[in-house]
Length: 430
Image (cartoon, rainbow, N blue to C red; front, side, top):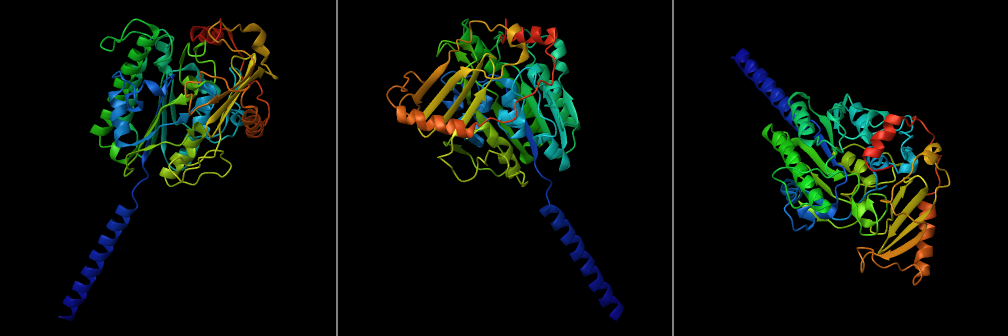
């Protein structure tokens, strides 16, 4: 009888241990995956979820309705290389060093991929732009970094988003969890190519909308594939852009300035158990890395200039932007409160190739300062510099303090004739 009781007690103990082990494993859920989707040259105000009247982005609108929509997100530079480097490193352009066609990420700077790889993540990237290729160091930390879609032809002349989506979906089927998957779409960068079934008209701005709609369709395919595999339940999804686009609002074309049409970007974030909401306060590209680390339960290095965009609001924090292309100019901007100051002067440290690159008339950049009230004049139509000198002086002091000179970027790449041809095809040079 005693042996039976002992056996029953032993069985009960074993059952309790097994149950405890199962509960412990259940509580220790694996960390969520990260799907980072970046879209080149995507203006925030051409998405339905930001109030656009045309049906350009039904898939992104649906994602925004279920997640967090950041209503006022800003690029740190207004062109691809430094902006994407900022997204991946959490650093301002002057800190990470990838600021010109002949400079790459500074050595040993951690990236989102290196951080997550150290945490056991499988890291994958599929990109379609020469300015986010491995030669600039943006492949750092990725187990697989695939830019071979560029072999189809120059992305300004050949649409690559469908094939890029195909490759990313294939990767979803074989990548172990947890994973970081970064997909960078080139469309809707100029030239604005027509897409059957996504026509809005023949003007450049209409074809731009058509490219956005076509790209939204491809992102929808990617999200649907993740959903069918049950991945979205345990995946943080981020959709954003490197910069916007200008269509003559301030005289220029393409994206050469620091005006709102270039600096404002969409930012949509979806994550398991993250309630849907709209965040009105301004956020910046430097905020993405600490925000993602917060969602993953990982500490953010205090040296990062950004903050967790899902944390407590900090309405007094300035927004900074800087760019050194076109190379003849140094353009800087700061936004604090309702005012924005743009400061443009001649580049004090032009690149060695400056004399060989001639920028076309699309840029329309001139030296000088501009002051705008973004509350009363969000389209930046009225320069208040002469009327509100005290505000301009205050913002200029902030600008000098916030964008204090860092170590000058040193050329790390030779600007070859092949690179010149590629940049020429993209509209950056003549």
